[in-house]
Length: 460
Image 1: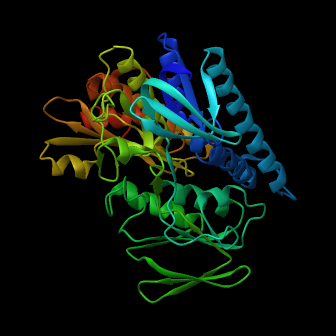
Image 2: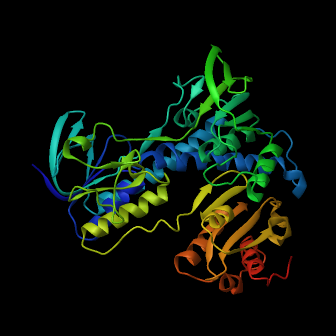
């Protein structure tokens, strides 16, 4: 029987990060994956959606070309080529990760892994069963699309199905106004689909936006300008397929929406079944695996990371957890700090958030100041034709440190990292504002928001 110091079950962002880090720290490592290396993020999530969204963004840019003096007569798109590029991007990255694992001597095992006991894993492969020993085990099996309504892959879709659609539907109802739903709404509406998004909670991006907050109102208006209809505070009670390309969605208020297709994007289901967790006594909490700040379960030598431990289901969160778990196994005093965990919705414009919102800070009884600046007042935004949006920073008036920020606008996904660095290192908001930012750049929007928080803005 093969023996390893670390065995990782699942090769998504958390799993492969854990394997690579453990190998770099001198451990003999094996990683088990039942599907493709890279997990959901690389193969069916983050990467393919961003490749599609980039094609949609370029298409929209060219459509607006006349604003920039560019003639765009007879503009069209080739969906087959769009999907071909998406596939090439995914395959290139997957090959790169496999190279990094093999370069470090990580054994890649193809099949479904199950905990046989507290020190070994049974792998169900295409050719039979194999058992390997692991001094330390890391569970990183991720999640799958939740199935509120049974999908058929043709009329009622999951995000996996939507990624492979070879034609843009004329009309589409999207169930759920979270990040996945909004990103697909952006993509399909860019190519002419009539999109209606239905959300049972009272606001779009309900996990990130407070009802009727300044950013939420601006985000709603932006979606409406794109032709996306939003229905919040109402749920879909039933979906009935009337025929090929005819789907009726009955809402809780009695309204019936007819569309060519329905995309169900109401969250994710954690991949916990069939792992043998109950048999060996791994403790559960809130639907996921319980872990401490060092990613240790209640069973010595067994760790869990990524989606299976709940919380925010983010690839970069899982990757960091993988690194921390590997370091703990190697004897380092590492631990997770979730206080600074950026989140991005890759709509157009983008929405990014980190830390506390204004309402969350107030609910905690904090004394705060808020600084903000509109993209419309930024020179580079005007040059780019990307004047929608604003940056808001929430500041603890006692410490003068940033408690959180929300950025809605072009390149928000890039700018939010500057806030995260400041928060992680306790840098005061005034000091962020004093840093010379290159002109003209969109990053000046954040600089001006930080200056505004301490009453030093000169462009407002």
